[in-house]
Amino acid sequence: MTKGTLSRGAAGVCGFLLIAEALGRTGVIDPVVLPLASTVLGETLGLAADPDFLLQLGNTLDACGVGLLFSVAIAVPAGVLLGTFRKVERSARPLVEFLRPIPSVALIPVAQFLFRDPEYAKVSLVIFAASWPLLINTMYGMREVDPLAKETLRSFGFGPLAVIGRVSLPSAAPFIVTGLRIAVSVTLIVAVSVELFVGGTGLGTFMSAAAAGNQRAEMLGAVVWAGLLGLAANGLLAGAERRLFRWHHARTGEPAR
Amino acid sequence: MIVLRRIGRLWLVPVVIVVWELATRALGDDSFPPPSTIAGRMREMWLTGPPSRLWINDSAIANIPPSVVRLLGGWLAAALAGVTLGLLLGRSALLSRLFEPIVHFLRAIPPPMLLSFFLALFAIGPEMQVATIIFGVIWPILINSADGARTIDRQHLDTALVFGLSRGQRLWRVILPSATPKIFAGLRVSLSLALILMVISELVGSTEGIGYQLLDARRSYDRPGVWATIVILGVLGFLLNSAFLAVERRVLSWHRTAKQTT
Image (tube, rainbow over all chains, first blue to last red; front, side, top):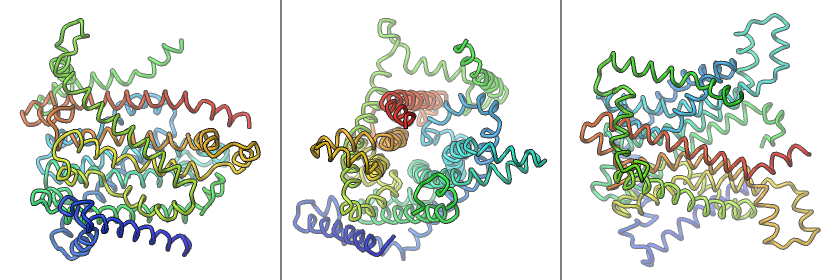
């Protein structure tokens, strides 16, 4: 990112905020319905020092992080298995195709049957939802592995595990990280949804409480923080992708920006 | 032969269903009814109507079509707005630099966070549900369209200029077609997201719909009913995805053949 794009981006954000503020001040949009941009910004800053908000935020991020770790531990090996053995993949495919389209939030009641504790229900659903993009991307990645490289290692006498560890996994890694990036946004969606319906502690509960008191500026402040965090997580992973997998972009001919 | 082989690939599905049936019967837990009970409940919930209507009953007509209409309506509205804005951002370097940060920020907001806010803004009803769906699914479409419109082969555009195509013609004949594969990738992501948001918006605020039936079944401790709704949502997701893939295959068939010849 160059200085020019950064300043233009900042100009865009400032312009957007100024227009929103002007619309509210002139009464085009009733500030009671949609709070002024300056009020929301003030609330956003205020939330950063609000211990209750930070606790709830931390709780949501905790559930997302733990869920993500579990789903990586489950979905990546499963994807390697399905991607390596064609026969297994062919048999499992119909099952995957039937399970994947089930919207994860529809499973909230089932998670409640399984776990009385809302925190467990939340983490289990996060694992379920985040596993699909990881599984599918790992499978794609394994399928794209250069067969010549695998054969070469095999003819040098390496066993199947060494082939997976030295060739398949490294060359599938960019796909896995892409899956991880999708999974991160999925974890936030699911965690907040469960908090909205089941309760427990987290951003979703914070939103319901703010909604009950009709604290619109506070609600939007929390939304801003959620967006900024999502942006940061995405940027971090995208940056890691570019840095770690420059060779991949070079090979596929994509610009390595 | 091909049909037989296709069916042969599905062998795991009946095996899983039988194992599920046996396991849930052995377990005897009310929360996990056997699939036969779930299928029976599905029939009771949606298929007790007269044969002339294919057994579809009033409850199915009152709940399933409104959900599907909201889902598809929100998705199509988001597609129209997302593609238009995306093409605009993709073709104008200035606009894209001004607005890209805002777009990426809005995309990063988990849509359920806005649910309570939309609920305060619109009150319970279809407006709030459609608003949630549109806001949640527009960003992948917009970003992909912008990406597709930005990375157009220079030669194609120059050729269009040499042949004197007007701005509108260039948009319809060159820019839109070459952006289509990326646009479709965005549309597919947002279709499954739209289903999730339909369910969640109906769980929070609605008086009919599949999500409402799910909530209703949970409130009345109708466990087979909960499972039945989950199955119908899975079937709906499967059908939507299959239909989308069929359309995509048709629309993008020229793209595949064009790639083969070059």
